[in-house]
Image (tube, rainbow, N blue to C red; front, side, top):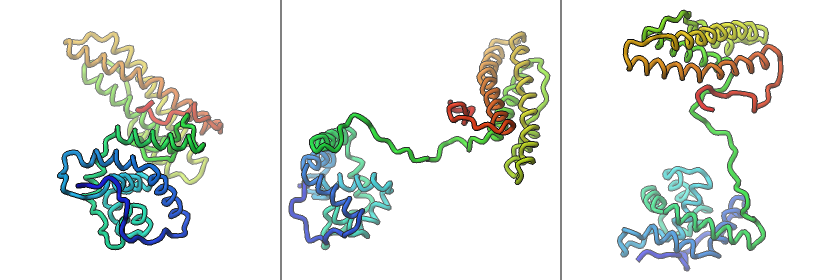
Length: 288
């Protein structure tokens, strides 16, 4: 039968006299004071499994999950460090004669822990922190580390290029539906200016390229504004075309004020030398 908590571990090495090892020992001591946490996890990992299989205890699975989240390990990395690290083995109650759990074992057991169980574990630990006067539980701390997102770097030149190419694409779609609009495609020119800005080594070169890119964006903005008026006056030949034209007009009207905002912040920052406050900046025309 699977154990809930390992009361008598096999022979283990003493904790190392290092800051991180002391932190792990403090966490381990806290978990030892609340054996019901391991019992909660044991209920999840035992459900649907053969009772004759001993496997990891509920307390060990909880400790393995803590190590994984604490260090951002993958399951492969977690398995490696449990086999390689004396401190992690001591934290997980893995004795000198015990074999470290494999990657598949760790993944199978940790994934069986329910969200409701973790909520109970959190409430118990929070209650212990309140009693010890460590934490009141009124505020939530979050990690504010910068992480990669699915948008490109929000440089003004890149944002202007985005505005030019998106509005040009939408106006081209309107023209293909028969709307009589006059506009010149400036996408290639805008792209050259954008690349030139990123490659420029001197500020005066960069400012000159920015002026031309701003001019291109202003022209496209004017073309798009006129295109909206022409589209509203256009009589479509079918209901399908009318719906498509209306949808394109809505998209253009969405990007018009965004383009104007990008133009304004670029003039203020690049041409006027002003430090634009973060709340006034637009970092993407696709995510607001």
